[in-house]
Image 1 (spheres, helix red, strand yellow):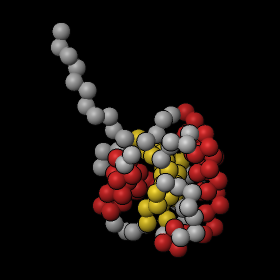
Image 2: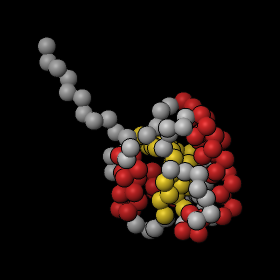
Image 3: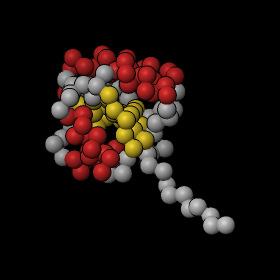
Length: 126
């Protein structure tokens, strides 16, 4: 009987982003780069998805300073439930210096290669 050779499974990402135009673009960039991506437009749905499946990374897009509170609350909920879960915020430099909740912060640049490189680095770190 032939033995099945298992390929390395794709790293799974939960992407939470309130920006309707940007979310599908980032999702597609991550998928093309070899990641399995589930995504949603709001934190409540994101938390619901988080409870249903194990993710290698929860990626939360923080849209401006007004989104910090919601993102930090979501991060806190996730880390309280599963302290080992990796969480990263995608945000601009100004937001990045105002928060310390996630494991990592990916600064937004209009550079898909840098975005994917940052995600890979977070997923593969211990």
